[in-house]
Length: 84
Image (cartoon, rainbow, N blue to C red; front, side, top):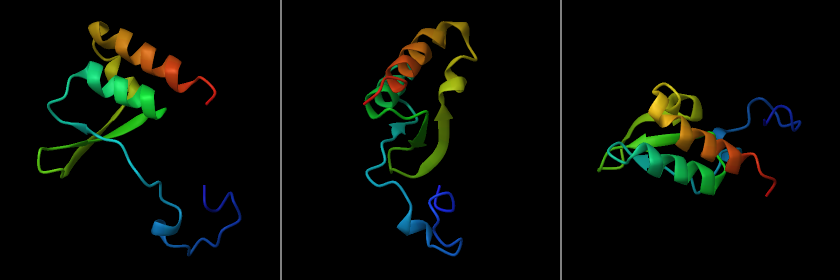
């Protein structure tokens, strides 16, 4: 994104990063994570432990691995795709 906007490739990450990042706890439900993704209109969500240490990232496609998880993912994608 930074290079596409014409920024110097040596620009520091802090100068182009997103702030106010949303996350889910590793023991949150898929439904809760999908709700956060929908509300924040993001396709990927950092996952943290209860000490807020990063333990992974969940993407919309991860929800569709199990057929029972397709509905939350589809709903989140629908919300994310709406113009803001």
